[in-house]
Image 1 (spheres, rainbow, N blue to C red):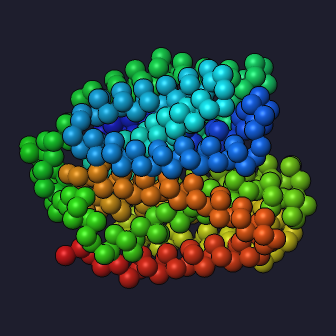
Image 2: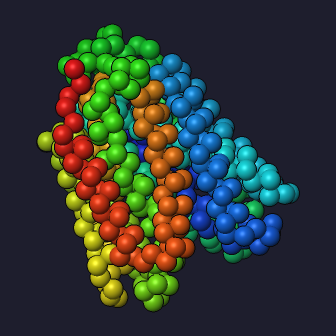
Length: 397
């Protein structure tokens, strides 16, 4: 905050505003939307997954603009796409209109708003990068705490369309002016030279790699699974948490208390994850950050008690915080910041794609009769494999 308070606040607000396009916000309206348009669960889930996958593809095209456009211009694009998406969902007269609405909201929210927030943090802060990444990632639990609750209250008062109208107004009348004000004096990305510095202020950092060079680096493909496995796993278990609760007989009250532990673990671990990244480096911290979620999947798979959801969700939250700091810092630490927008867009698109696939994978397993023991065991094995791959990845030549 002392190094650059305006851009630090910009990064936090951008990631928090991405919540309007995140799964936890959409989940509030599932019942109302399905009832209005007569959709089955599978149809509604298919629409959402297709929109998410399409947004991942578009992010590959739009993400590199963060290296070419000013931060103000990029912010205007992201907020505009997100606001149009929210308005389209609010006005949809037919379920087919949900497809472009979901697509734009997912692209502008989970895709671009999170992308520009994390990219700005990685580009404009070279000292204590782990701490700024932890601070920036703190925008996600802030949104998790505020947006679903607010949307639920507005929904109860005026139906499922009203929160989307309110979201559009908040984005255009509050979020956009504040973000544009905070980013007004940000240096243009084109002024950044080798090692993450501007032409006027060179610093020692990693050499700058472009996206083509990164895609030829074997280490990128070894580290990428470790950066993706936490959102992959958490999206799957949160999306199917009702099914898990039915299998084990956990009540709604138990699950509500467990989610409180999830949020607490997420927030608290951000404060430890940032300093850990600064002390030992993002790549090593990434591996350590997978230990809690590995243990959480073992708890889910091997225990059947009233305390099981509290423990496994709290451990998931702890890993989410660590990965928020380490996963955000790993790419600028490894490849420099000159082309960080293009590089991060690849990782972000892969993350979006993985979060579209994981609920389908676990859903198929549950429909085939697999219990939480098999689901937890498979996810734990994938987490362990991801940690090993990240551990053996070498620095790029």
